[in-house]
Length: 349
Figure 1 (cartoon, rainbow, N blue to C red):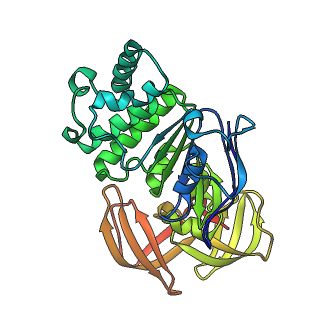
Figure 2 (figure 1 turned 60 degrees about the vertical axis):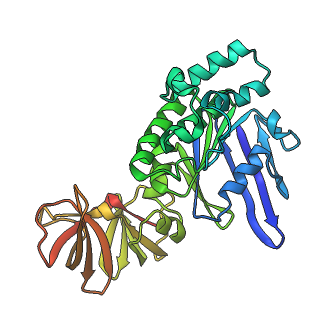
């Protein structure tokens, strides 16, 4: 549906976007994820027609839309601060885009009521309210209803939950995903929160310094980060230098300061023998050793622990001096700790 081809943008001497390429399929939710200042919002504004790029092309269903004015693109846009009109009622805010479509008063009233119901608000109760009489969650719902009311071809959301508290943000993330999927919408969602992106996205475009660092499903990014930046940004801090010793029986053997570690070979292509690699050990990799022949057995000193509900977050120091941060689900936590690293909870890059 939407194609971005070689998009570049600079302000004065500052390069904001560099050769950005990706596609969004019909009915897909794609999250633009990355740290503040990486170019996510600028890219969204270019797609919306609120800014123009210096190079490259934005195409919709194969046709370039760069010359098309913002109001004729048929896109819905939801901002971080919601951008609601404070001098208008809830119903008047939702109706704003519909009036631009020159619908009749009756059609507008019906659409406003249906859109408010869609986001969990009763038009009879909320329609006449002023914006300053609403909670943060209610304002978010009104902003979403206003974005959805014109039935956009593409829904774009720029950090729409960023100003809400954590519990409300998690609740609305789930509701938003269910609503977008139920309506069959195509959506482009900007966030710097990886948990939000993981919960919402079919695919993630992870950006860094104006460039695409990696594109994939949430599971692909988490299980197989393509670079040190991707791993660190996703909170995968157990990254250790190593060298590939061999491939055998569905595993890759990697020589590290921890010893020879076997990693499940579920990635393509396999690293070459002798190649220098980075071993990524995800926090959930640690588990008790159940058998004498268990793989990847380590012994380490527990230096720190904190309660995380179903697990404990522990920090351990291996005899080599290497520190690891792990999630420990077992009840017992002896010190020193003998544990195994699950081959399917690690990757190499």
